[in-house]
Length: 359
Image (cartoon, rainbow, N blue to C red; front, side, top):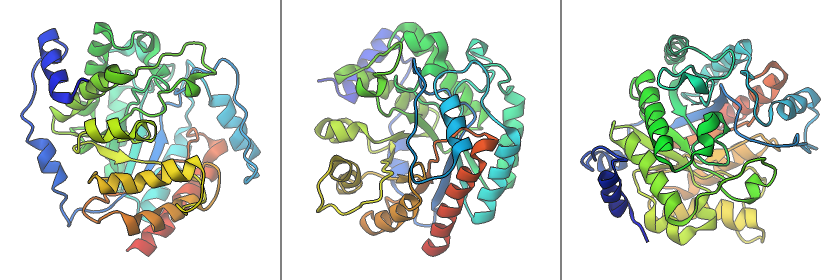
């Protein structure tokens, strides 16, 4: 079984990683400063290219009467060679986030940027680097800390274009390295870099025209590759935690404590005495991460109901030690489009209520 130390030795020998930085930063970031502000974050999408569906997906959202939003989400689902994004909606959401006291925006970049290292990835109407820098400055003036997100899970990497079909090859490592380094520079070395890494299973790709799943040592080898690229620049890696739902023993054996964890759960029930995979796997994993001493940013959503986000805050603030509870994130899982404006605003309002109560 390959561990992280073995991987680094192999990577250096193969030339995948040119050098390995001293492991001092990871220890530093685990010493959580009690004076650090709680994170109150929203996940917004520049790119909504996360799936390679071969047929449109239909959503059953009985809890909402939001036809136009659902139509937009279904329309945007799958790969589009143009930007599915509305700037007026984006601006309205940033102002709303600032007004309710939120202080961070996780930006899913994907193929929405004309990267200098790989311009071939960009979709039509993608932002130029100078446009992104201007928007980052605007966010900071609003009190919003911008954090980049590139999802390298094979279930959500259609944004990589042809390179999504070169996973774990020499060319793939080269492209991913270039993109990570360029994004870190564009964001002026952000505190965190969200690497995604969720839902890399056969079930999540059953609808795809092209499916690929890394598993066992290969998943960990590639994961360590991404983590070390980020940490070498004194940026903290951040991931979704659901790999641990399916492989808890491996997760707690091999997941570095330096990686910030976002377990996520979008349901309404938090009672661990009740049966069901979502409760016994998803909700319980907040407890498991705390037991093993991982720093967390629990993630809720108004994706399918109106109560989850505030319930997530109420629940997790009681079970996670303050030194390891870095904050909370809401993830509406909607394109940044006018048809979804109300749903986005609802997500912000819900987290805003929790901010007031938490204070």
